[in-house]
Image (cartoon, rainbow, N blue to C red):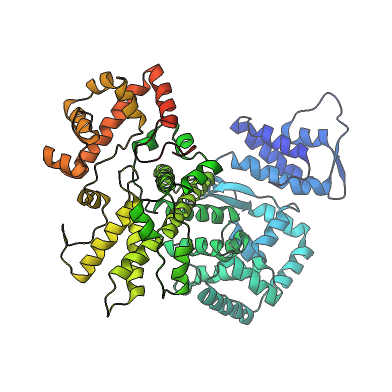
Amino acid sequence: MKWSDAKLDELARQLAYTPAVKRRQQLDAALELLSEIDPEEQYPWDYIQYKITGYKARQDSHITLSGRGLLADLPSLIEYISSTIDIKASDASEKILTLDEVTTEFGVSSKTIQRWRRQGLPAMRYVFADGVRRVGFRQSQVATFSQRHARRLADAARYRQIPEIEKAQIIARARRMSTKCHCCLKLISRRIARRTGRSPETIRDIIRRHDAENPAEAIFTESPARLTDADRQMISECFRRGISVDCLAKRYCRTPESIEQIVSQQQAERIKSIPIKFVHNPLFEHADADKIILRELSAAARQAAANEPLEEGQQQYLLRRPGNLPPYLQDAFRQPIMPQPLVIDAFRRMNYLRFKAWRLQLDIDPLDAADADLELVESLLAEAESIRNLILQSHLRIVVLVARKHCQNNENLLELISDGNLWLMRAADSYDFSRNVRFSTYLSYALMKNYAHRFGTPTSGANRLLISQDDLLDQLGAPAQQSVPDAVDMLLMQGKLVDALTQLPQRERTLLALHYGLEAGSPPESLTQIAERFGVTKARVRQIEMKALAKLRSILENRADADHEVMENLTSAPSRTIRTDIPGTI
């Protein structure tokens, strides 16, 4: 409620804590006082307080209130006190008029009644027969007010009286606007009011009365209409295209806060539904994985990796630039060849960023998602996509070279390259950087197998689309490289893991020994080979391995000195697949 004077606001809050019987007496006293107020007079605050509460101050406060201010605040005090008491309309000694009945009696809008209430028309909160608490007016008080302001009421009635033909025009225009633009009652009332010179409240009252009297031909069955899923998607799409929140709020008759909430929920649902694919590695679970994986490589380390010579076969194959290629394909051979250490580093970073985004995605609740979490997931995925594009650009030349080898007389080279690009993207998403195979070799083999499948050429192995990295690596005969950091081997050589391994169950200890070649004289075995040995699926073997590694890591982290030694070896131990004389490489 709005108060002209803070004293009455303070008094109303104090009266709310008095006993219910006393409040009823104070309510009647306030109603009697309201009838005595002259807008042109000044009234001492001590007198007002005494008339309502019966309390007489010992000292004069020397505060006076204007009659106009009291006419505005006393009705608010009366309504506030009545809202704290259960006053039933049926128990009143006289008829209680509703707001609609008063507007009908005087032929004015509800907005005019609200204005009259600020000028001395008292209203109270009553509990009506339907059990709902609403504003009501005592018939005697309405009559008293109408006698004191007879001329004002007559002028208002004449001014607000609208011919039936004009009402019909307003209804027809509102129906047309509702059908064409699907606008809400509030917006339509404003637009019609600007064209007719009437107030929006009057237009809104005419439409509401029409709908109440003609439910079969009602323009608005609900106000505002419930937003559908299509509406929510449209709001989100419009916001992404640059339409302001205020404009959307007016269009859908919602508050700006509700529009912002809808946009946030739609964004959270969109991010929640993004499929995030990555190749897991136990290093991602390490407590300091960010420092280990995402550390910035120095310029010297990058230069040293770039100067690393290619193998003789790779140099003749990759550095060759075929002729008679379109200009955009020639650009693929102008891209520098990414050295193997940087390829491994790029795949490690890309998959780790996706892994972080995936973990954040699991915790997102569309109904209560923080904007910072949503932005972080999008940022991680964007950074991973940037690294992926760099990998694709640097290996596009392999697609062109392999496609040319398989191009037959009646085959379109560009179609082969287009298919090869698709297989390149799939290979980049499924390549396991911890396996002892170069990505260029893995990609070349995948392309040859899939081109052979396209042309129906018999090949060793299954005649099907091959992109699964385990299938290709198994057919290449590549042993499984350790998926954990090389520091694990170093610790094993020092005897640091012997006790930890003995604490694992027999099946998990045997699986780790087979997969990583921990037994003397036994080479590492692939997941497929272990699956055949155990008589289970390859996916089940991977699950057992992840569970065993997690247990092993937990055992090591419980030892105070083991964690420190693991960190030192993770950052300094040599790798079996990456040159150790390149400073700063991972």
